[in-house]
Length: 107
Length: 253
Image (cartoon, rainbow over all chains, first blue to last red):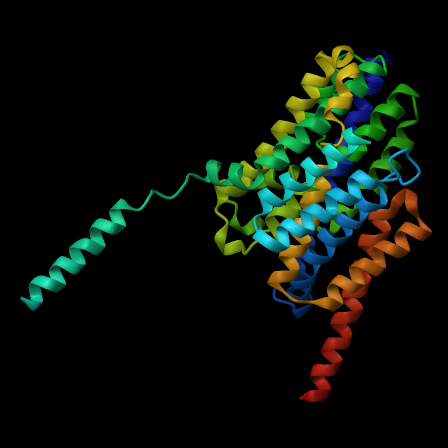
């Protein structure tokens, strides 16, 4: 166990920086309020952010593993297929995950 | 006779209205929508707890870090750095770099829907990727204050409880972790689904194309800090697009 004082400072610093990063844009937003730039960011940022997060997850797939990333790719295909078909987020997520886990265990 | 019919009709309407199920509570609504994601964060939390325990740190550090920091990827890095006794400055820089992407979340997160000082403070504290992704892609008018807070409390709680379980049962779960393997796919599925929904809402191929290009370039150029590089380049592309759009509309006018 590292020294408790060191752990406390390390954790405290990480918390302070994280909370600051999360809070800062709300103050910037006040300065931008009513600007057309903020309107555009509001329109374009959410879709871009979720797309980037999705692609980030894809980039983390280990294609060099023994499964060659096939479980994850099958899971994504199932998620997209079920979601295009039924438009039910929970159903699509569960279906994709079941396929991913099932293929993992089959391989 | 006619008045009778209308009164019967209006009575039936009133009856039908009162027979309609009461609107689900905000907690139930949040659980229905984000419950699967809570389950996903719980399993990831277990993984984090197991890591803390297997690194020889006391079990209670897992729920303590998860409850107080609540920033998934940084927590995994932090544990490694604590074990290696990394300098505090290195921990600060790493936290800053990994979490800088949050700078873009507050601009469009529906915080104005959250009532009360304490509620808003908590909402900002618990503004993780999942909370932003789930809540900012919805019409803000459809979100109540407690629905937002329940969604975030559920994410936060399941992550911390998962870490507690992983920390306490670490060694026992270490062998059984294979059974949980694959469940972290829930988050991949979540972001895929949210992207499809966001695109259906606003058919904006430019936004999707720019985001994909930003992600691809970041993946090639800086795989270690892909999220930060991708979010920053996408944000820059937004400003450029905004400027071009403004110029175009001015020319039109």
